[in-house]
Length: 239
Image 1: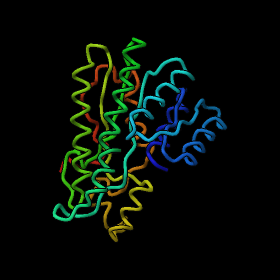
Image 2: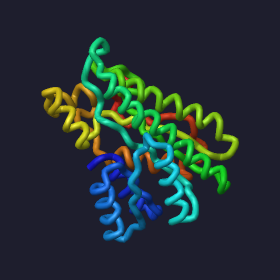
Image 3: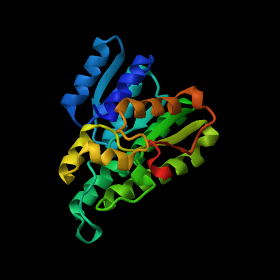
Image 4: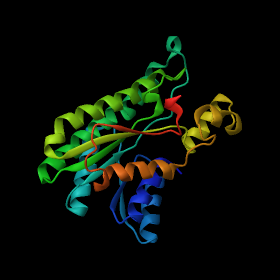
């Protein structure tokens, strides 16, 4: 399970009215249907976050269904690139940047517009990565995008704090998701060898553990927190 789905499920379990937004219609609709089946409240919106008009429609659909938007977790990302700087793929750079960085900017743009319109503040969480703080080889586009997410989070927090809109980020480490499993296979790595290199706890994290960090930042329990990043990385960036 990816962190986006885990986040949607956790929020629904906590009583939130959830919009599951994804480019993958089959998986997104299935997740929303399962939330409803288990007693939660959710619906699905297909969205390409690199398309501003599509993001605007996503927010409009949310407001049409629920009346307002109080919190958002911006989680979409593509698989990291896999070439050194002298050989990076320009086409993949453009596609990754359009989702991992531009997609976050567009999402915040339209989410904040709605929060300002309705009043009462709000809370936004952007999913960055340990790659937003430490470089990784052969990942120039992904590392650049995730650094960008951290910077954009701080800018938005600075600009909209006076409007009581809090903006924070979560930087996951090695989380056991389909994306990580694909990367391990791509680079010929195994969990037993690799996990201790990425975690002081000698294990991969679970998607639900990232969802918990996002839920705390969205909730009023973090009401005096903005412009910061939670490092949910089992100590990777501290050593």
